[in-house]
Image 1: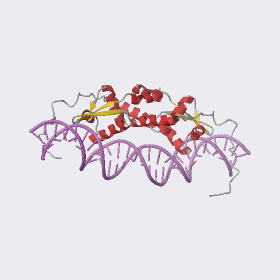
Image 2: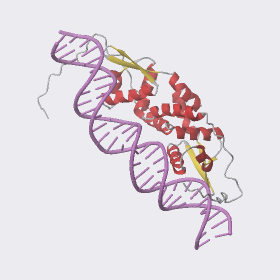
Image 3: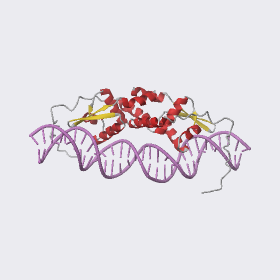
Length: 117
Length: 117
DNA sequence: CCTATGTATTGACAAACGTGATTTCAATAG
DNA sequence: CTATTGAAATCACGTTTGTCAATACATAGG
């Protein structure tokens, strides 16, 4: 709004030492960071992390009715966590009759694992 | 409140097929899951993930004054994210005169990296 | 002392989160 | 058909989160 500009006091550094070495910014990271953070966020709850842990250890598909009693939580709450994991692409689900089976999608963790190493 | 109890209908499974194979619950995981989830939660924000990414790539200590302009965020917000990372044990900080330098603590990511592989 | 500068903390607020109670849906058994 | 069962969706709630504006804190230079 103010049109009159100022002769800014020229950022007078307190001492001769420069603040620090320049840092290059990997702008390509933007999208990748959002994907990685989405996965990390989904794993950022102890219940969900244990769900993924159990599912991974079983390598096969596991019924929700077996997952619920593992936790001191209501069935809707476990279902809610599974939904979060599904939305993050970490697990998939399949219905067989009355039951729903969940499984880990290993590729979903690969990018994150690679970044971390 | 109701004292009169019922002869519960004895969980009549719809078919012969059992719900699923039994799942063993690794209760030892409880504490580990909380540690892992704490790290994952800290990484579960794009800004923080990029902060860690930049710090890791530099392997040295980086001044806050270099980190702030990398993001379209106010300085207090960046400071807040750095604090979160510090509380999760992922980064450490050091003051030199007016400036604060941050660095990644590599060991903090090891357990998570191992679990992920 | 006083002033300027880099960083951290506080206060406020909307948005998202974790949870349980309740309800809805889908599918099977009778 | 009706009744029952497993799972998901909805509603409500208190808590946490991400953000900025304003402030406080520390240090360096005059």
